[in-house]
Image (tube, rainbow, N blue to C red):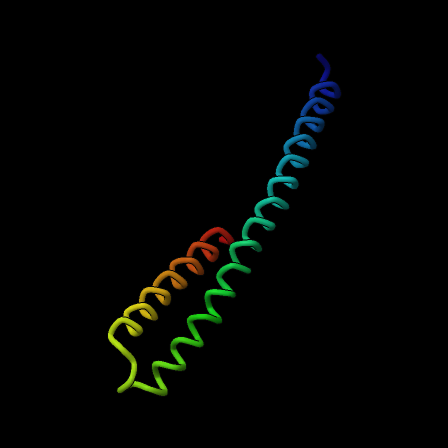
Length: 87
């Protein structure tokens, strides 16, 4: 096999890998976008709960504070996961 044939074969293989990577990247972006959208909805719920708790600290039950804390921890983990995927 000549050097030209080898380079042509290498070029075709690189193109194939590149195309496959492009498709996977597109799918990963969609997957991350879906995760982001879900987290954004949770963020709004968290902010709403947090605002109620902060404005009514005496009236906020221990259960409400614990629920907000858990939702906050879940959000933190979710955003960290997305951040790590983007690295």
